[in-house]
Image 1: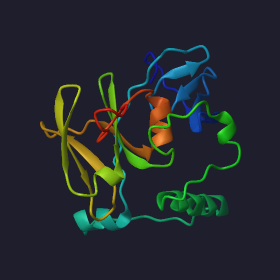
Image 2: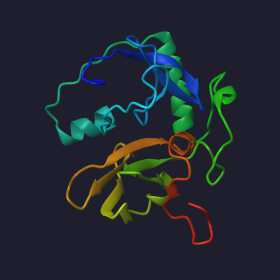
Image 3: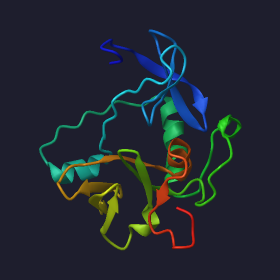
Length: 196
């Protein structure tokens, strides 16, 4: 909903290697991570963002053995993209054709394909590399809020919970995507002399 009106979104292009959404109603372009309209008649408008948990079927069934799972046969394109994504998950890193040409100067504080949990609270943003979460739960403070970040042992997805039990806005993502969306964000575990 934008200004009380329902909008319909689809992929409209790439910017900084990330999908830009376009709304059917005005042709405005939206950052799919921050929810900000970046170009068009609604430029400057902001969509409400929500944390959407990510997991695997195996982990979901371990949490709820009675869960019903529906599965359809993916298209050839979806199967190829899943293979590409699995290569990225194993740390090899790959940008599909055309991505690199949409990208501006990179934030080189971390390698661009490093996986991690990006957390935003208010105007503050911090990236937690998976490699720095492997030793066990991490307790940290962001924007005055105490939080705990854990790496789930089953699905290997990091998650953050505030001391209040609430889940802050968080994205399991690659460094380049989070760094482009939140320039200059902090990095968990950066040494005192290191930026971030």
